Amino acid sequence: MSLTLVIGGTRSGKSEHAERRAHASGLPVRYVATADGEDPGWEERIRAHLARRPAGWTTVQAGLRLSDSLADAAGSCVLIDGLGPWIATALHLAGAFESPDREVLRRVGADVLADIERVALAAHRAGAAIVVAEQAGEGVLPPDPAARAWLDVLGEATQRLAAHAESVELVVAGRALRIGETWTTLRSDSDLKVVHPLPELRHHGDRDVRPGDADHAVNVIAGGPPEWLRAELRDALEQRADLYPSEAEAITAIAARHGRETDEVVPTNGAAEALWLLPAAVRPTLAVCVHPAFTETEAALHAHGVPVLRVMRDPDRGFALDPGAVPEEADLVVVGNPASPSGTLDPAAAVLALRRPGRVVVVDEAFMDLVPGEPSSLVQEALEDVIVVRSVTKALSIPGLRAGYAVAARGLAARLREVRPPWSANALALAALAAAARRPDQLTAIAARASAERADLAARLTRVPGVRTWPSATNFCLIEVLAGAAVIAALRERAIAVRSAASFPGLTSNHIRLTARSPEQNALLVDALEEAIAGCT
Image (tube, rainbow, N blue to C red; front, side, top):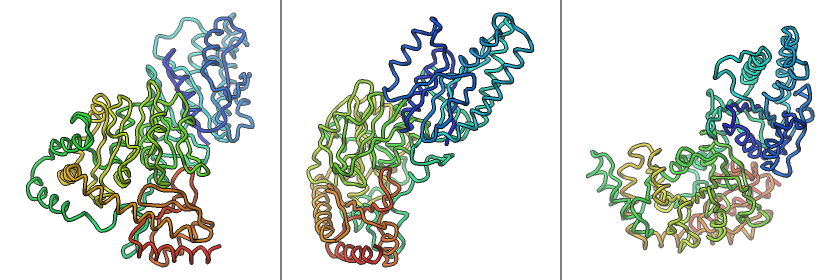
């Protein structure tokens, strides 16, 4: 499926980075050891490597043909660590270091390079393959003929692998730099070669709505901005459109609403921008996205070359968060609360259980203001390792303004600001943020409306045969039906737009997200849904 080449100098952290990449693949890992286990000089390093590998990994010793280690590897991630020791072993077994002979050196080099080509071909039949290699040629040429041959063959071998690889990563001081323009991602559910961040992750509900459709796809409160907000926006347009945006008023209001300091608030171009800032601000080495969830976070991480591991919510457990499923080595964990598209609201204790030394936890609370009383919110908790992302887009029906913000301890907030483009939030968005923060009673009324509309929809859905539902705390419901794609198409013929959940990791085309509207609109939707299910199954 994919070949990744990880290169770096001695003690650069390249092996640990490659191990994180392998773990993030989600595939069974076959670790191919190339160092000589009988060499006393390698004993301590081998013990250190063994200690940090997960117990479930399979370890095999590389032979004279490195390509043999990729045999029967379909559905697995093969991690070869590393290329330099294997080439040195090949030279050693040919006697090149004891009595260098030009013909022997030439023959060993040719055999190694021929096998490297076989490795590259075999890698694309595996689930995924990662090769670790020493970065060659950063110093003077060694005087010894065999050492020079090792360097020459290593340099040529890495270049050949790089020519076949979807991703080449240079590790310096434990940090990985992606080389070149293309990249891939290691996944168990797709063999797509990626040259842009996973296209399926960039699909959102607004694409599913045509002019004139009854909109149950977009999870924004219907009716447009309330009149009090329209007045604020008209005033902002009149008085501030000719000035660069000033965040001070919005920051002060948001900080006061949540009981935080002003330097802990970072306005952004919607919640999505706050999530896109994470890779550059946090610089994680292994990120975990708890799915199913808003997919832009994972797209952003992939775009910045960050290894991502998916931890899946279990539908048979009501999509409840399982903190114990997150691997200890993850240094960034992103979780939605309430989650989309399931609408699951996890208790604050479950989210807080994700915290670990050296880890940043990001809580996407973009839908929290639609939950009456905002139970489980962490936005008021001044925690050094937690970032809370919020939005007023849904509640105030202003998706066109992109009004969001992050709240974090001073250090994390400063890192977010450092990588944020200037004037991220425009004058109208800032006016909306300030106005909403000063009117908690209005937000409370909107949340009550959203809760009532969702309760009405949920009650109607329980009466439809063939529909599986889950509890939701937001303004939408997730359902599962048979022949979901056909059901969606049948609703579309009736000019009813709903959101296929197939683009959410862990869900299928049989999962559909339905945004609640007024009782009258909900009734029309559920009647049409029942007819569509009957006609498609």
